[in-house]
Structures are given as C-alpha cells and as structure tokens.
Image 1 (spheres, rainbow, N blue to C red):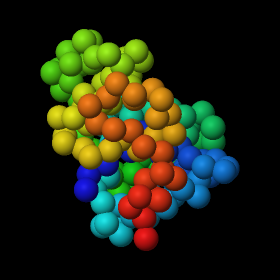
Image 2 (cartoon, rainbow, N blue to C red):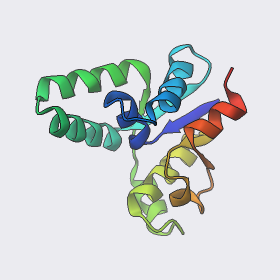
Image 3 (cartoon, helix red, strand yellow):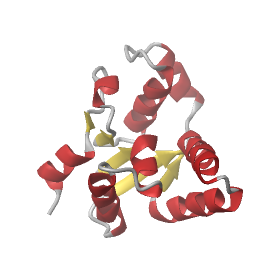
Image 4 (cartoon, rainbow, N blue to C red):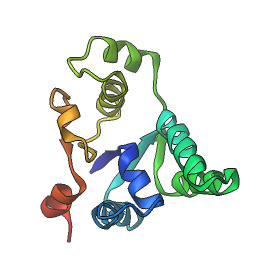
Length: 138
C-alpha cells in the first residue's frame, strides 16, 4: 500500500506535537517497518524545512530533519501536469489540489492528513492517522 503523507503529519512527528504525535508517529513506524510505502512531494519537503527552521531557529537541525525524511519517505516530483490538474480540481485550496493530483498520478491509496475535510473532493481518499491505524494498523 502506498500513502501520501501530508505536511501536518510530518510536523506532528518532528515537533512532537501533542496529542497528534502518537498516531502520526505510528504511521511513520509502519513506513519504517516496510509495512506501507510512504511518499511526500518535494514542495512538502521545503515546507517542512521552513517550519522546522522557524520553530527551532536552527537551519542545521532543519536540514537534518529533511535528511531523515529522505531516508524514510520516497520523494516524488510534482509535474506540470499535476499543476494543470490542480487548476481544474474541485478542491478549493490549491496546495491541497496539487497534493491530490500528485497522489493520483503516483497511484497512492490514501492521503494521510489531519485535514481530511480539505480533501473531500479528492479522487484519492484522505484519512486521518488515527483512522488509518484503526483500519490497517497492527
């Protein structure tokens, strides 16, 4: 199974955001254990760097977080076709529409996010980490 991991899930883990880190972290453990394939886009990686650098006020820590992510998740590109698909998407938020288009092209089974309502019109279903673990966790 292939899942797209939204930025908010990554930040939950990196910043140990309570109470979300428990479920988000367990999804990451499933990726690390090879139970599922986790993907993330290059644009999300830059967002992660920005948020971690701003939070920790340390660019080296932010770069190390990015390197750790690259060792855990598969980085996928966002193509020009993904952007065009997003421009005609029924998803209101453009960034979410791009994630949906990228996830669809990459044949992801789910988008893991805490903002599932943002992806109601996505062809790839969005699911919260908690609901994903209830459905597929051990």
